[in-house]
Amino acid sequence: MNIHLKIIGILLIVLSVIHIPFPKYFKWHIELKHLSLINKQMMTTHTFFIALTVFLMGLLCLTCSQEILTTALGNKIALGLGVFWSIRLFFQFFVYSSKLWKGKLFETIMHIIFSILWIYLTTVFFLIYLK
Picture 1 (cartoon, rainbow, N blue to C red):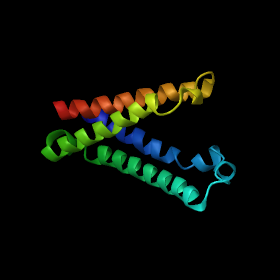
Picture 2 (tube, rainbow, N blue to C red; picture 1 turned 90 degrees about the vertical axis):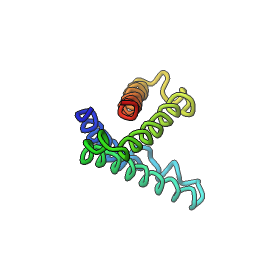
Picture 3 (cartoon, one colour; picture 1 turned 135 degrees about the vertical axis):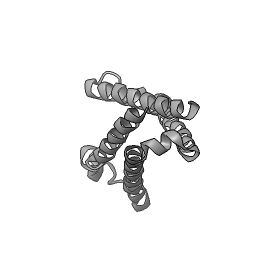
Picture 4 (cartoon, helix red, strand yellow; picture 1 turned 30 degrees about the vertical axis):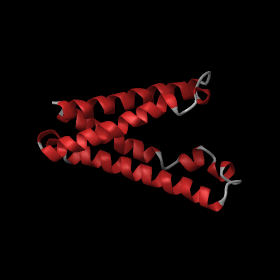
């Protein structure tokens, strides 16, 4: 499991960095133009803090994998991360509309890749907790 935590650490850090181009890629300067100031700022602030949280999760997995695997606190952290990523997996299928990806090649590929990633994260963290 140690190697899985290292892999997850790297994947989560990469995922956090992917958030950097979101405003440009999703054309927020156009898409958010008609929102109120509070909604614009909440969108950018929440995106920043999601990226930061994902980065810190990745850093934790990379630098403290042994502690996550062998301590009571690590076991509780694994449970928390398992719950977190299982909820994200739930959202992938039951909150995001399939209209966002069905019939669109790139979006379908991304949907599949991220579904596999959320399943992987959920499985590893729950297996660590249940060991």
